[in-house]
Amino acid sequence: MNERLDLDTIKDEHTLEAIRARLDKDLTHSYLGDAVLGAIDGCVTTLAVVAGAVGGGFSNVVVIVLGVANLLADGFSMAVSNYQNIKSQRELVEKARREEEYEIKHIPEGEREEIREIYRRKGFEGEVLESIVNVITSDRKLWVDTMLTEELGLALEGPHPMRAALTTFGAFALFGLVPLLPFLFAGPDVSYSIVPSAIAAAAAFFGIGMLKGFVLGISRIKSGLETLFTGGAAGILAYAIGVVLRNVFGV
Image (cartoon, rainbow, N blue to C red; front, top):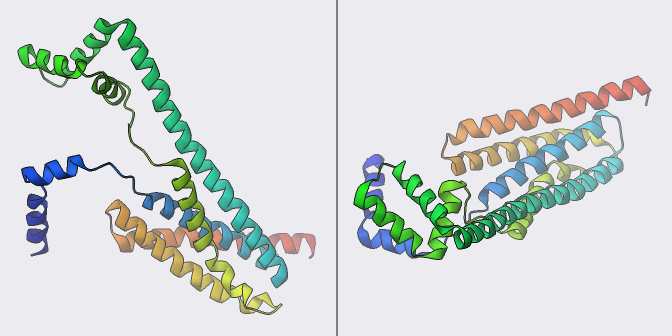
């Protein structure tokens, strides 16, 4: 029944009117992937810091200081990295655009032949092929855009660097705070906080994984369990390292 409803919905989205309306819309980028990435990394790294500090025998105050410092510093670092990555991709597209415009201006026949070869490899030939070449090369912007996407494999549209960075930082800080919350409301003895912290982090990992599964269109339960396992393993490893180092140095 659900399959039938989905098929009917897909058919409705492929009427001529629906297709035209969809193509006329401005392309918008989803920042959900940036949020999922930031959330997973925030929760994992903060849990690792907290677990390592507890395993090392540090006091509640030290755990909070290390946790908050990690939350802000690592979150900012990840946001800046995401910003620079997306900005670099945009600059690459703009550089390629300038080069294609220069080549079209100075060697138009060579660029026209490239368009012809691109569509010849797609199976077009004869008058149909020549018609396609003439249509594309009669519009300078379309011509350049076609070279960027078909020849160089570049995406013309992408996320806004600052929005992606802010989304990453916000998700990192929000979910990274989860393992730290029990320590913010506890006394000096960290032993009463580590179990609630681990439970809260586990719930966050599973929820993030389910969200990731939704974004990728895969099993939400499986994705949730995979993320829970990965995050949990990082926390256990950090705690074990803290215990080992405490024993080695006799803290």
